[in-house]
Image (cartoon, rainbow, N blue to C red; front, top):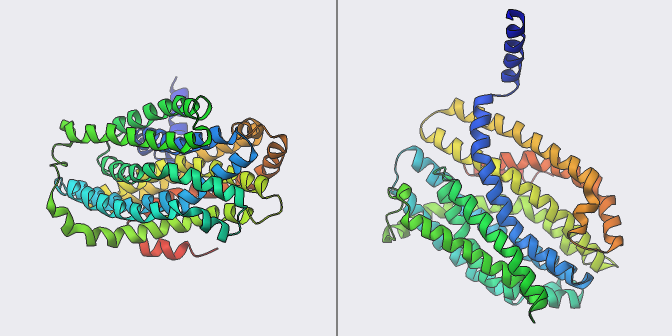
Amino acid sequence: MVKEYGGEERKKGLWNKMLDVEEAKTQVLFAVPMILTNVSYFSITLVSVMFAGHLGKTQLAASTLANSWASVTGFIILIGLSGALETLCGQGYGAKMYRMLGIYLQSSIIISLFYSIIASFIWFYSEPILILLHQEPQVAKMAAIYLRHLIPGLFAFALLQCILRFLQTQTVVLPLVICSLVPLLIHVGLTYVLVYRTVLGFRGAPLSAAITLWLSVIMLGIYVHYSDKLKDTWKGISKECFKHLLPNMKLAIPSAVMVCLEYWAFEALVILAGLMPNSEDSTSLIAMCLQTESGVFMISYGFSAVVSTRVANELGAGNTDRARNIVAVTLKLSVFLALVIILFLVFGHNIWASAFSDNPDIKKEFASMTPLLVVSIFIDSIVAVLSGEKNHRPTIFNELNFIP
């Protein structure tokens, strides 16, 4: 018994040397809900693309092109702009300046909505822009139709990202899971009805995404307004938020630049694919790969939220050594999860490709791209976690992102 107990203790000690088990448990408990939240919100637009893609090759190319253009000019920038709240609210919460969290939230919403107005004009007139970028005219025309019907969802997405950061920094997780999973489940049925059972057809896919995003915003807004847990951090609308627009922008702009540098290099491939001879298949294939990697990135980004929130809290409390340990543990967890996903893609790539299209040529080409895709996913899982540090040292990380 003594020897057996001693062996177990040695194994436990070895495991603890490899990984801070207690910290890992804490992060998993926080990260799993965040992963579910991130993947659910990402899946809203992805599901719309999948339903549209099964209408035909042109529809698949148009919806994937539209989704990439929407990400480049709208969604990605809004994610970056709201990233300032991870630092402002995180450190404010750690320093017990609870009232300021609601003020920071309002200033961030103003900034995000202002940019949404600019992006909406880009989306509305996207057809001539895409043609100017030498996209196939019919694909560009249908992509523009998709984007116009998605515009209402752009403003919902702006509000959504700000509220998410506001709640994440206070370790509010269960409401986020509920307010993302429930709309996603509704979205699947709604998209099916609008695309296949109404005259909307192709237009029903983006319209369904916009409706679902607004549903989630309404659910979260009701929670923020009536929750007793947030009574110290949300005191209602205040004019004081205008005083914090400039400090917010000083963090929001570098954060947006950082996120754009991470994404734009990949999304540009979809535009370049439209220049190839068989543009419909090329655009669809590249976009499928990017959608897959972006989905995995959303999972890793759940761990990134853990890093950003917990590090901000610890720095606010003056615990720098604890903050370093948090980053190390998160990296190990993210890499492990990436390896699990890579195994699925290696052995189940045909199943995954079938979700986008029934075309055998596209499935075959996707299979040939899988080896390169899994390598990129592995590297990106590390970058995603390190990006959680971007808001604490934005200038350094912006410079690193210029390195090939």
